[in-house]
Length: 268
Image (cartoon, rainbow, N blue to C red; front, side, top):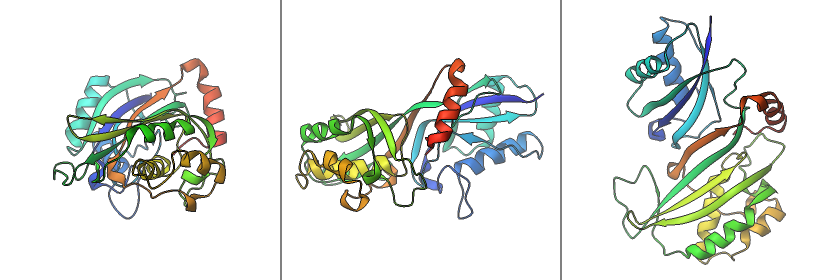
């Protein structure tokens, strides 16, 4: 009898074309499915993720689900997968769940971080994990600007033109930037019920322009109303972005959440 597992994992996205399997390079999905195929002696098992991450994007709390052909203890499955996966992909938590659970359509919110290293010279040990921004910034202005995106808005101006989503309304519950004095870094924090393609990276790129004094404080508010990607700032590079956490509603809400999220396309 098949058992569905919910798996939380972390990965360094540097060497991958993204989470989703693609023909132009290796992906996180391909590595996990390859490991599962070895465990089942040739059986192909498809995994479903909470959402896709782009090439170079990292994760500390990505969530997937898959159906395994037999019952395994969570700890045994975790150990087996980690023994077969490359060292830049780690299984952090394995949980047995109902067949009703869906890693993508049962999400209720996600948290992303974006890291920006400051100073004239970036440490070579950060070059794959944080955007380098050598200019001084006004953090108070950036936080004031980010306050304008809290709530439900149409984020067309902050979505890649390559997106296939018709509905670009999302609800942001938290948006801020903090200064990490120990590492001389900015850490952007975004929590929302869903995110569009490149949305966080475009928000960061535009907010940094505000911090530099190149754009007015309430530029994000204006761009929300403009609904025009061409007017927003640059898309910040992928390697500073981290999927930190994916939250799910309680099982009694799974059917309702699945149908609603599938309808409006809250799966990045």
